[in-house]
Image 1 (tube, rainbow, N blue to C red):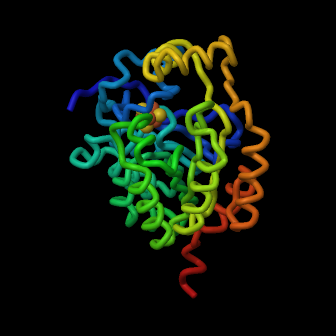
Image 2: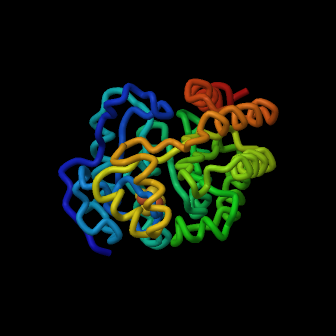
Length: 291
Ligand code: SF4
C-alpha cells in the first residue's frame, strides 16, 4: 500500500489525560475512507491532503516499537484519534496488530476507537495487554438504525455488526463500550435513537456509553457535511448555528437527561472519570493471576 514519511509516531497528549486516561497518541495511518459525512479529521486545520486516500506511515510498527523502547515511564496509547486503525487495508497489512504487539511488549496500555468489527481479530492481544495495563476499546455507534447508518457512515461495519463486535469483546473479558457521538442535529438526535442505543448496549453488556449531544463543524469539514446532507438540512443548520463550531442538538438537555436516566437504570457508566477508573480496575496484574 502507499506509504508516507513520518518523523515520529508517538506524541504525548496535551489534554492532561482527560480523554479516557490516554497519555500518548499514535496514528498509524493517514486518511480514512469509512465515509462518515461528519468526519472532523478532514478539517483544514489538520492539513491532511486527500483525506479519503489511506496511506500508512513508513515502518509505522517498527518506529512505534523503537520509540516505546526509549520511554522511561509507561502510559496509555490512544489509537484512532485521527483515523480508524481498522481500515480496509488493515485486515491484510496488520500494521495496527503489530503496533499492539509492540505496545504489549513495552508494557503500555491502549485505548482504541473504531467503527470496524475487525477489532475483534485482536482480542488475543487485548487479553495479553490487560495482564499488565489498561485496555479500553470504544466502538462508535451514532444510530440504532442500520439504514440511516449506511447513509452517514457508508463504508464501514453496520450498527448491528458493531454491537456484535462489542458483545464479542465483552464475552472475552475486554473493557469496552460505546462512543455515542456525534448526535447530529435534525438527523439522529432523537429520544428513540438514544433509547435504542442504551438498550442494545445493555443487551451486549457494554461497560459504558460516552455521549456527545451535537457535532462540531470546522472549515472544510462543514462544507463537506453540507454537500452530503443536501440543501434543506443545510439551510436548517445555517439558520440554527450560523458559523458556530459547536452545533448542539436543540434538544440536548432533554436528550442528556433521558440518556443519564436510562444509563443509571441499566447500570452503564457514562462519566469520563468513572469510565477511566473502571478501566483501571480491569487490569489483571500478573501478581493477582498467580493466585
Ligand atoms: S471512521 Fe473516523 S476518521 Fe474515518 S471517516 Fe469516520 S469519523 Fe473520519
